[in-house]
Length: 464
Picture 1 (tube, helix red, strand yellow):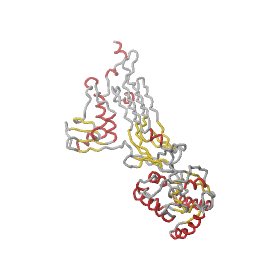
Picture 2 (cartoon, rainbow, N blue to C red; picture 1 turned 45 degrees about the vertical axis):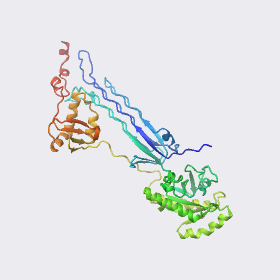
Picture 3 (tube, rainbow, N blue to C red; picture 1 turned 45 degrees about the horizontal axis):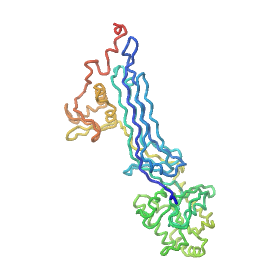
């Protein structure tokens, strides 16, 4: 018999598309071979976007194929032709997917159909020389390079979106309870670990409609990884209330409803201590199940006063005969309504957390033993866009850095001509010997940087 595969945690390796390079081109006209720059911009690289799809219930596809790559943008061309944009890729994820870094930093909490999150942004396309031209720079002989798309690893973790979580030992009747209260039809059998995936059911009690989920595989030691419990405890983190489903007809030695409740409560507390959650503090009801068995009815009557002394509202039920089910459903609805009123926001409304912006407006200069290191979004991006084989492009970079204030900051930090300067962190930095007010090497041929004196010549001169 094939065992269903349920995957609720995967690591995705995402490669966004690179931006296309800008084009350096000169328009050719009759009697005027140098008609001006007409190089187009490069196209933007494709994004990788996570999108909540109600029809997706597992992360199995990403477990089997964790590497995803978006299309890169095309380079610009002459005659002002912009390169094509790389196609975005939308990755469908289940409702309730949490996105984080491998280090545990929360990036997004995706709840609600259609919720979107750009997990890896495509690189921007480089500007062509037509876009770089101005009244002072009439003939740029260079274009900007496209930026690489983001390469990131993200962890997807599915946390079931449910209002009420059913917790208890295996075979306590949680799946049967979901089936009895809703239209859900989970697989049910009389042996431990029948349930290998969380089951969801929609319940209506009066005017309140809410969802119920069972949590399979809770046994002693579940919070430390024993059995299946650790894999599924996360699915009750969103629940507003819990229902302890206690088996009053178990034949296992050493077990009874009170000891089962103590064991499960201890596992919830241990999970809270390990994760910072508050499952043990959630509003909770107790359902004494299997009253259709005569001995179970007697045991339920015996333990009910003990549970009520602990402050629990106790309901005696039979998932098989539906005895006591309406009262339990209305009690669960009351807890859900109270939680929604306290929350004060719509049920499907969640704040999406976004990572810090890659490009900030400022920069800093850090003096290190061998170099002066420049760090900041704009300088680092500009360096990646520069073709260092083109002297004019290097000169344009120097102008931009000077206007930003980098040269003044280097002087203030004590830098002198000939000192080493690194732009960017670590091994990815571009290192050069600093020459204040660096000039492009082609200027003695073409005049001021970005100006070609041949463009100033009229048609009459070109005819001769």
